[in-house]
Image 1 (cartoon, rainbow, N blue to C red):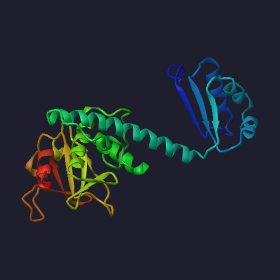
Image 2: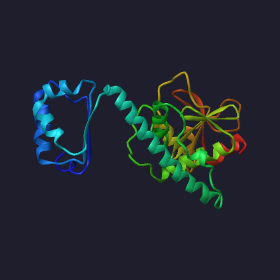
Image 3: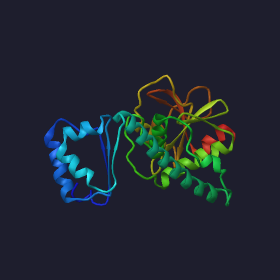
Length: 253
């Protein structure tokens, strides 16, 4: 922390603990290092925090940009996750709009499509995970979406332009629940092996693998459902996994 703290914004969530040595460690650190700002999130009143950690309070209160926000930790973390995910998805959409313009010879995306979907925090987090190409039982890891995540946004923007509507982390078009996942530098068969998701009451009918170069080995593909499309069984049931071209064709785009 002594290397990373100077000039950064420090957020302390529910930290005003009865474990005195933790307060002492932080106080010692802040005596030597100067963060840009310090925000303490704790539902207790200021007088109570001053009483519990007088030494730490004395140091923090003398720092520029110090603020105590009376709020429950769970509520604060939920709001932080939501705001962060909204920023991530907006950046992803901007990247996707550039790819959209390149693919269509300069056609612009409607401004409304670039806005972050009006969904809850958990759905936003799932959109981030799909943008990174990780299953819903794994954590999102990137702070900024890369170009491959922009490719996912491009597919989503094209579906929205064709009349799709937002359905949680999915899109809905032609009575199909559509999930778009990052498949950059990977075959679809390899990607599917990573998605060891537990069955749930809700799932996509079609998974479009943005950036996929092909299906992969035929041993990982089976036909089913009376369709001419390649169908793969997943842990959540049968679902179609398709390249961008196949997915658009399936939806009549």
